[in-house]
Image (tube, rainbow, N blue to C red):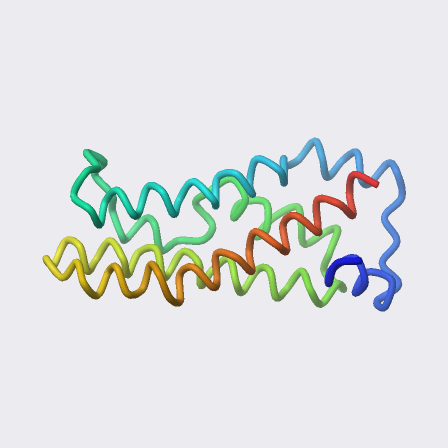
Length: 143
């Protein structure tokens, strides 16, 4: 049993089948997991100088600009307002975006070593937390 799944029973979170269906229609949590995993590849390519993307740290740092973030800041609150682990996911997701923007800022300042250190350290840790939380949240709404 995962952390969120265990916490769901601890918090007596009950999601009926209709609400689960609504959540699945609002956002694909499995696609969100894939998108967050893909970010590491994109950022590593950017750090390595192999990317042709024009990444803007002012946009990347906004955790409400991606599809998942828009959901977290909007409809998800209706479903999970009282669910503590959701608020941790929300904070971790915001930190994920801040660290991704920091990586880009360092690359743009020609400090690839600092970018690499963030990418392999703090970013990797927070990315893992977000992916694990999304995976467990997905299991809650697909059971």
